Length: 364
Image (cartoon, rainbow, N blue to C red):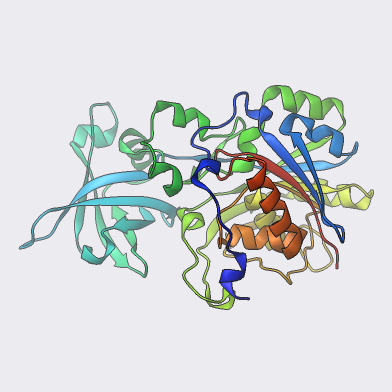
């Protein structure tokens, strides 16, 4: 499909720079894709009223790490330059794939010194966190081989790194201490993401208690969200766009529990596009969800037939983004254009810190 079909005008005033407080008081657009879409305005704390006892919410329990690193590139015979690197996928005990700026001035063999502040980590004792550019790919992507590995590397990154706010927020304000809490779900557990699974940011202990009282199950999967989620679609046609891969995991007990949900006639609700993409990557053609572990670069556009997910809770996404294409596939192209027009007109807040929606699946 043509990428420009997924474009729409979004005023700057609709972009959220801070989350709602309390989190579950964000606005909540319920979208039912009938012939004439039914759009209902609510709040996230109303979620239990749209679910049935025995339904199951699936959360992504990945934890955001401070993956934004600022450093100085060293190369023999060349001037030193400042380099900004955003880690996006771990590929070994001492190696990360990253997006670098300025990417065109980085070459394999370059050494990048990410200055380390005061502290007691191994990296601090050494005085610096240094990596060698092992490989260079397209669009500013590089492979960094760090001098440290394992827990020592993790500690060093935690010491010097910054929370990699989405570019549409970072362009308007700097990251601060509040983001360390705001840009993390209350159930984050598995470290490795460089972007938050933002639909989950709306959940609070109070909302969890209401869901428990309503008989709604909670299950957790892990997909380490990469910085590729922020990359624009530069192709003119969706067939020419290549997704970056992300590492995910579904354990056997969770897979069995979700299959039991469907077997008894209840519904699986993905909290966020990250949970949905992982479930759909794992699911078999008959809808069965097996235990699964690996990398996924699934790209969902209209025409995709969903196998595992019945409802989707998700925030509002960028124009011409892969995520707006995904929700258009899930609830219907015309339905989502109508829903976003309504959201913009009535002042919903967009993107990572914005409001949320509950999408019912369009069945062909």
